[in-house]
Length: 205
Image (cartoon, rainbow, N blue to C red; front, side, top):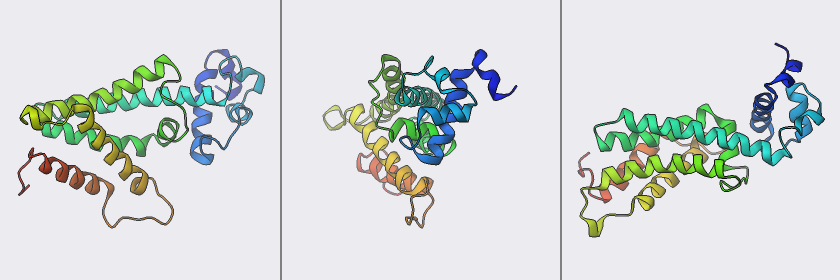
């Protein structure tokens, strides 16, 4: 099927695909809706039947990205069962894997300035992704005495921030910045230090 055939029913996805290419090439703010239409092989007027503006298109990509991300995180969590530690570490690796495999979605989600509260649907799927990491944190920390146990939201936020930092600084080809260690090793050792500090793994591991 040629690109011109998209308007018969697949135009929305064609525009998403076109915008993903443009986001990877130019960034989320480096293209217009007309350029996305041209990339998809349709007229600019056809685009407005689906999206009111570029931000609506990017929000759609972010929503799809969070859905993929949540599914990957859930799969990683389940694949580590019944070990709470294995499940928790797997969710961290899934973060890196997602950023590498879905760079356009990642940028739309985290670098476009689109709020996760832009639509109820986007907020819901973004929360679902965060919930997976919170569940993993809650399961892993349940043996810590309650008075010394960090809230799962704080625990998971620390790991999310660490994962995001490794991705941004070392896994996405930041110009002029190179780590002597693979991003996976940086994240694994960072998580290990954090978990040892909480007493969840022994100092000699």
